[in-house]
Every structure is written in C-alpha cells, then in structure tokens.
Length: 179
Image (tube, rainbow, N blue to C red; front, side):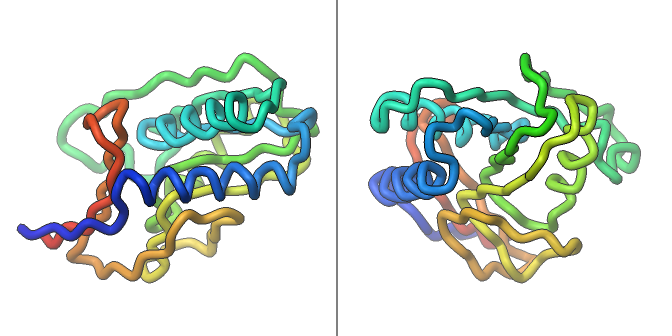
C-alpha cells in the first residue's frame, strides 16, 4: 500500500481560507444561512470553517450544526457488524434557511443523498448547497456536484482519499492511498 501527499498543512489552510471567502461572497453576514457538518468527518471541516469565519473574518452569527446520517444511508443494513451512530447536534430550525452541507470528501454522492433525507426532520430549507474539501469526480453514483470544492482529485476505484485533521490525527493533510 503506497500513499501520495495531495495536500500538506499549508495547502489545506490556503484552501480553507478560499472556501471561507467564497461562502462570505454568497452568504454575506450569514443571517439566513446555516452550516451543517456531515458526521463523522465533515464535522472537522465544518468546525474549522465556522471558527475561521468567526475569528478571521469577524462573522458573528454563524449557526453551526452536525448531522448524523447513519440510519439514512441506503447501505446501513448491509454490513456484518453493528453500526455506531454519531450524534446530531442541530439546535435550530432550518425552515426557509440556506443550508450549506459540509463534508470532507465527495465520492459516490450517497452520503449527501442521505443528508438530504435526514435534514427534512429539521424543516424545509429554502436552498441547500454542498461544500467539500475533496471532490472525487470519477466515482459518482448519483448526480450530485459540490457548489464549493477545495480540490478536485481524479482517483480510480482502487484508490482511497484520506483526509487527516490536526484535531483528530495531529496534522492537516490529504493523502491518495493505493490499496
């Protein structure tokens, strides 16, 4: 198994600032916009972007939530071992709000489809956008595309994209791993 560094810590930081600026361009003061990190890995990206928007760009009213999609997945009963659900932390209504789903890697699109179903429990958004750090464009099973992408990666099926966050793995980095 070999791995190649796609993004180092500095490159991840530059991309996150670009994504934050793109969000500000489209959502101004975020008065009608909520950010939703898709559990488990999108949480780290959503938390980082929300923190950056608050501290570096002085946006005061960021509403941030985390959405667990475990039991909304179309494959959740297919595995042999029991699934471990994450927590959903959304303490606001999304009715008539602009929702920005945030996930680390867009691969087949199935997680996003699950998130679209799961978010309905919290109201009917006026608009839903998707922000991903990595867009694997050759592996989509569903017609889902990101509105905001950090980097597009052409990976084939026997390759895996792994995103490391300093909050979890100790350093920010993105790897392409050959299985």
